[in-house]
View (cartoon, helix red, strand yellow):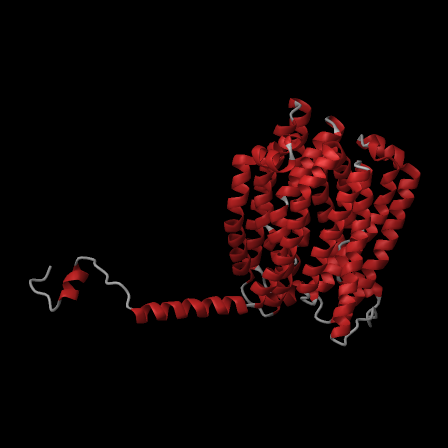
Length: 466
């Protein structure tokens, strides 16, 4: 310590004292924070995510507002029958258009993207037709093998729902390509209002599972129609009505983007099987009520992924494509998005782990406490499902869809094996859901690391697209 000090400020600084900021310094800091916030908000990525989140969030808020009414009207068994139908639809939908709609965002020119839509539509019609023929020939055998005889004749709605789901995916990908996130948000909210209102009204008259199935099928078609209307109105406002004409032949387009039906469609199918098998196995080995508990647990736990994760994924996909075209660091973009989603998801999922059964009883009624037990462990699975959205969105850009298919085979095999062991050896539905969730979370974590590693080794968009 020196013997003398030039002034009091030097003495105070030597003892670690820091004077309070002056009004001028406070003003400078506030100005910097305001500028940083303004710069962040002006970012097209942030504004697009906020727009999609607002629309999806409003739609889910409407769904959750109706949920206590609908769950009390229909009960666990009706939800179990709906969950069984949705499980079959989830398996069938990924192959309806062989994943070609996902490629719509990638082409540099709209004319090529429109050609992909045309190709997708043709494939969806053919696949849905063959599905209808297959059900006509062997629906009873399928129902008996899966132990879901209660679906009955309503299984014949599956091809219709498949076709409608393909139309929804085609319209969504075109809107994502055009960055028309406002149209997506508005149609999502309107669809939620109409469908939840219809379920509540129908539940007052005929509160059975088949009504939910019929409304779900009609809802898919309605959602596609609303988006098509939005696309038409937006195109007319911009004096640019798209026409489905492409100078490339359907055969050329199918060949150019063949990695989607070869790798992405099977990957989506296998992933859907892994998500749907728990519902089917709970129905077969326990009862429809167990499937109903699981269906509600998945619906609630999937809200953050559907709300935030899907919004990030929808906006991230075209954005990461642009970054790739510019030759920028894709890995850094994936890491930042993943960590951001982790920070967002920790609190809501953590609360469900601690208070799941109590929360479900409070919101949905005493009949649904068991669904809260499922949700307690599903929350771990869905946290990792949320944070892997940027990695999934980057897969087609990085050209690693073949690797994703291999990953999905091992991931699904592990999850299904764990679930089956718990059911067959221990006869415990809770243990089965727990094992399924832990294995799934570990698999998602491994996938994120793999995609980030692939992004660091990536050679560039042009080389990948050859």
